[in-house]
Length: 81
Image (cartoon, rainbow, N blue to C red):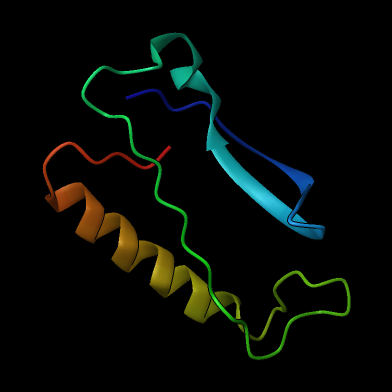
């Protein structure tokens, strides 16, 4: 797996979002047999005024990310990109 991770800001459904993506996989997609995309939406308790996560919620969001990554990695064919 590539290790060329980067992030950028974009608008998703009309709201500001921070996108974290593995750009190193660009030349390897699409992958036959992996036609699915999983989106995970969370309702934050204390977002900043711009809608992004606050520093107070960052540790919890990090734990959720780690748990999702571990669960998906344990399944057949899933990959965090």
